[in-house]
Amino acid sequence: MSSSLLPTYVRADVVFERGEGPWLVTERGERYLDFGSGIAVNSLGHAHPHLVKALTDQAQRIWHTSNLVRIPGGETLADRLVASTFADRVFFCNSGAEALEGAIKMARKYHAVKGHPERFRIVTFEGAFHGRTLATIAAGGQAKYLEGFGPKVEGFDQVPFGDHEALRAAITDATAGILIEPVQGEGGIRPVPNQCLRGLRELCDEKGILLILDEVQSGVGRTGRFFAHEWAGITPDIMAVAKGIGGGFPLGAVLATQEAAQGMTAGTHGTTFGGNPLAMAVGNAVLDVVLEEGFLAHVEKMGLLMKQRLAELRDRHPRVIAEVRGAGLMLGLKLNVPNGDFTVAARDARMIVIPAGDNVVRLLPPLTITEAEVGEAFARLDAAATAIEARLDARGAA
Ligand SMILES: *Cc1c(COP(=O)(O)O)cnc(C)c1O
Image (cartoon, rainbow, N blue to C red; front, top):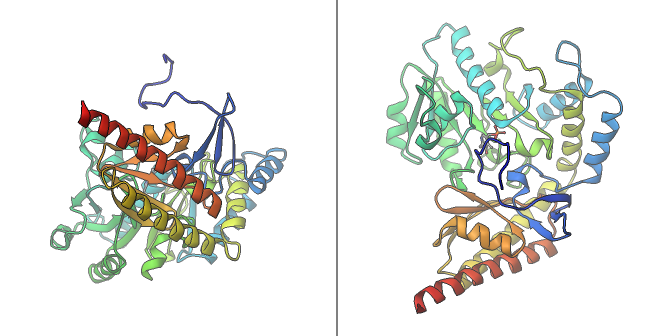
């Protein structure tokens, strides 16, 4: 498989030609059950008729104008996000990392305009993932992503996941805010307990710093609420969103309270592509579906069903599966065998799952998944685990 692409990804040798809901179809007509959703991106599955229509209708009118003129679709989408979240202000961009960059800049600017430019540091957590730009690899703090890319961007202090003492100690007069994923995605589907999120909110209020949530993976219905932090009954000051909000179209957003956003005046931040009419048409179409009466309840119901079936799977295959984790349709299997092996075995059973840190595979099906499709997923995962056990037995016998 030689190609002119920069080889930063180790790719599976499979090509999908089209998709329908949770199904991906190869050039040869083989059907794979997609429980990866392009890494939590295709929130409504593939080729959702409402999204296809919104995109194609808009494509015939106008794609891009720049942000130097008004974009009505963006005004509408921002109004809708404000109406259904804690936020008062929205900035659109094209990806998760860019949303995080915007969120980090906003937090720093907030303190700067309040007369404290020295308050620019952000506390983050081990196992976090916030993107691959220079600032976001510094925020994520993972050595494997920082290695060889020069000095780490200044201003990020990382503490162990769940270490309250270390967290308190990390907050100084130079701290601007705390940045956390309510459910760590790449880190291995590690949910932050509701009580801890409430504790973080209190701590931020006590210290006069900002709570910044990275809901790039956990947001837009993924956990059965519009945003995962709603489970804890708290609100952040700033939130980064991407992945699912575009349903497959590159779209990110920074949401914030008016208070937190106060430093972001004309000229302080920008993007050429962000929030263009094509992206806004798709984003509005995604919200049409996700905010429809009963949709989030469906996600919650399918999530509970999945979790039950996965627990059953763990009981059937204790040598392969150690633990089931997650919330809603953001689920993970912590494995007793290498997650890469499980990913391949699942693919052999014509099912897509996504590896994550902590030896986990993620299950991130389209939010539109049905009970029958959950049953189908169980059968395929069962086949994958059985195949791995057969290999373990063969190795034991040899
Ligand atoms: C994927 C992800 C990002 C980065 O998003 P990109 O669109 O790849 O830049 C940031 N934070 C979290 C939690 C993510 O899952």
